[in-house]
Length: 102
Length: 196
Image (tube, rainbow over all chains, first blue to last red; front, side, top):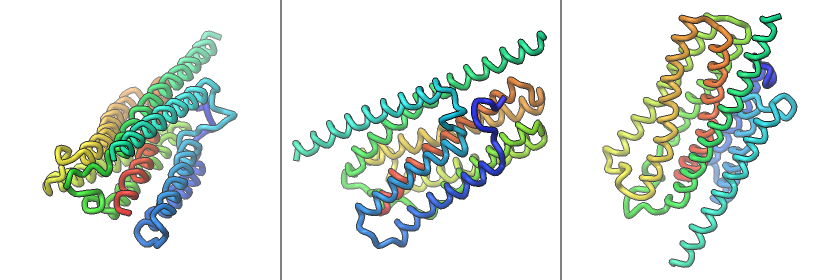
């Protein structure tokens, strides 16, 4: 039944939980108590978020490059590409427009 | 012989449904990506109204984050119980997941009502329209996930852990864990930069 990916085990979820807790607590702590410049904190938040998304995909959704069927991975990669094009394109247009209206 | 063929067929159907469900999740991810984009474009358009700094409570958001993460883990334990064919385990972990998910939605509603009470509802400014649309869409997904959990509780209780029920439970798991991923985006894009 669970052949589409690695078998779920309590260990997988607990490892994922510990990693997720660290990747959540760190940016929250930095925002509340940190004294770094704003841009650096935003950068840390972004990096922690991307890593945490990957941790969730790996440990909770059991995605990996060997067990997950290739068509599933292709669908995910295609969606990621679409998101990049749509978000990147929209930001470009909106911020350029904003800049020109100033 | 026939049994093996049926099992093989069931296995293929399960794989096909998993792919189909991933396609749905990815289309949902695109909806959320565009809502995130709208929010980032609108975040400074407060129209003289309150900004995130005055409205967001980091402690409350951290509690929501922990509750949702805990519910992801408890759903994980339900999946483990499913693999080991423990009906009681699946039911117990699903009920705990439901209670955690319900608490999350309740906390979100309390936050929304508090904001609306101080005249910071979705109609106040472009920023708040985008905020309520993005966070509300996520909350609506979690609420529908709760309905789905209740349906699966009934199916597990009545039909037992049959192959179709197990297959549905695994897709519900994908949905539930996916919503936790969207929440990572929400606290990283909306709340943390908002209070910074």
